[in-house]
Length: 148
Image 1 (cartoon, rainbow, N blue to C red):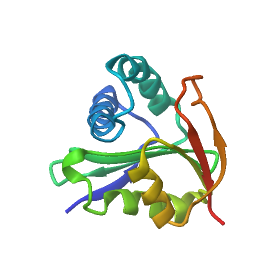
Image 2: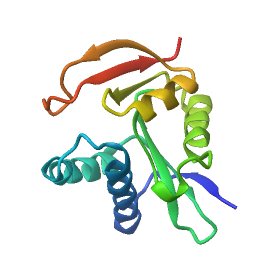
Image 3: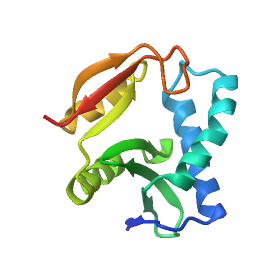
């Protein structure tokens, strides 16, 4: 049985376990990123997980993380599920919980990740704007989505 828990304080062990999920998920879904891109993003993601206002994780029976979502100012800033757990409903449960409990109303999605776009559209988000670059100025177009 899985559990879903918010983590206001985050141990190094938890953060590095989540960073491993991030990296394996990115390698599985973000085929447009190079090895150099992933290496450059890794410390930024770790810092983001340390500082994000709300971090909700899904843990398995052995207290090992299967996925996580980070929310800041009513916006999903990160959602990653272990490739081994993809398609099991974890992402949907994480998003549903933050929609209900944190009043989330927006998310940004890499345009080059059609699976993520389809997932968020299925969850009710709609594209309202587009940027040619990501937050780091890289040429990875971003779709800005919000709940209607």
